[in-house]
Image (cartoon, one colour):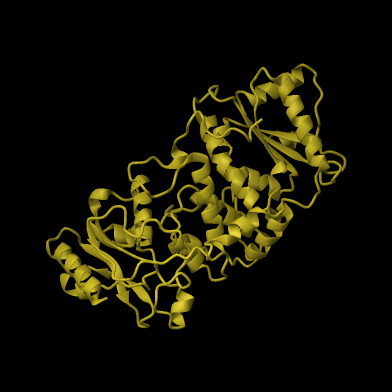
Length: 152
Length: 299
């Protein structure tokens, strides 16, 4: 996994001022978009750790639960725009299940501000940068006590 | 009630005698008359054990997932309206073949809460039945081969009792308040998985909680993993749960699981206009998609 290769942030990522954000991204669009941002030397928040999966349809809700359990303060799920899925319909299935899963998380008391979804294509390096930066700012502005339900 | 029992027994006897089915699953009077228990009848002469009344709470469709039952091949089953929805969902998901099952539908005007029945409650009324009966639209099963009419009076709804009222209460709370409510509830969980065993739609032979490479859900004796288990159980039943309430009834520590199930059923209906178990020809809601699905939450 990508996050292991990176050097840990000084504060260990558990500090409120330095919240860890996990981004589950699809291989074909969002990862390439993030790659584009990197190769274009764009700067974005280093709070994010990217985990690449073949398709947004492969991003199981269990991954999100696991991320929260391990102490992530925010989780981003991102894939190809509707109609652009490399596997034709993975993102449509993903969208449908996450619409419901999001409601369930919210009902059980997870602050939905901590969960973000986006469609980012391979050419949208700048969108990746703005989504990550905005999300990081939002997480930093939140109280630190939510999503504890999974930590126990 | 004798009339219902006779009709049931006659149907079961004919089915077994003609060899149309080799097993009939139904209800029999328990050792305590306020409780009904499941009975498995393989011989026509035993059919006279069958009975039905407003204490027949259990959803018998749960037995259809058992290998011991499956090996009988053709099966007759006694179902109330809600149980029959579970059967529909199983047929939709190719777990049961419509050709292999004879549905003996029973009209039901509500089943009495077991805690009240144990105290001697014998009348079906708004106050004595389960919440699921108050919102029930399927007092007569949707699909059946035989139908036995009810002798209980129709359930009178004054509208004063609000079924699953806690859902709106919780919806209006802040995330922190919801979190602390559910944390308290899930802390009670003893990981017995009775909710799963009692559920007619939890049929995976190897449940996600039993998979340990990797282990997604902590299964130790502590509270760790309780929230994950209850969340994932509810998620796997979103858009599938038909609201029979067996999970909540089976729960030894009284976690209000039906609040979550009912909430998800409502949300799935709002989002996709789908209710589980109403049509055996409908595709399961998460097996299909539409290009115009709800997109508001995605940037």
